[in-house]
Image (cartoon, rainbow, N blue to C red; front, side, top):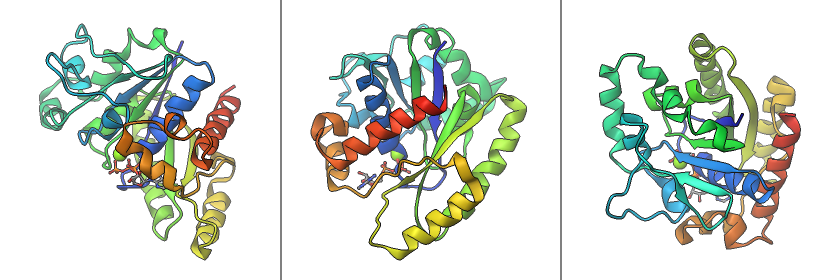
Length: 251
Ligand SMILES: Nc1ncnc2c1ncn2[C@@H]1O[C@H](COP(=O)(O)OP(=O)(O)OP(=O)(O)O)[C@@H](O)[C@H]1O
Ligand SMILES: [Mg+2]
């Protein structure tokens, strides 16, 4: 049975999409069958997968309305597939409020797909809204990317609080790990925040950290995960390391 992982942080620009896309690509490079789902109406994970909006283009929004809709698209990596989204997904935030069991819509949608993949990786918007709640309810576990900056710990406490209430809806949801992203060892604050986070959350924090790497920031404009854009870069190496640490962790 496949495992579903959501990448969550209500703070914007902390590396959620970069992590979702590159973890998914790295797991697929490690010969896992992976599905990436874009659940952020900004559609950044969709564009990073080179998926173009064409005629009869279906998205996760369409699938959530009707699970029979086909919206799984191939990527340049043979064992990585994508369910894209577009701005229509903002409509779902309002429409879901009218739906019975609105927190469980994505979980229902993914029921049939779950067995076809080893991993389903979901990118989330920078809020803790009903879409993010759907992601957490559908998931076996979450990964929380954080940037080593002053308010990182406060942001983490909010996610932990939200996780407590999600446990009422999905008792088995786990925290797979906290990931330090855009790590810059030349900055003193990086060490201070890292120490605080490791002290508070111990083994929950991945040993692997993702450094600030210009190749990682360039790859989206080419619509590629880092593995295809520059396999020799430190960013590519670190996301592969993360995938390996993740696989070890969930054994
Ligand atoms: N390790 C890194 N090194 C350099 N640049 C990075 C790194 N990780 C992410 N970036 C860049 O930082 C910006 C924000 O990253 P990303 O889009 O992954 O964050 P996000 O949390 O998904 O943002 P949002 O909340 O808007 O969805 C992007 O321009 C991305 O290319
Ligand atoms: Mg994003």
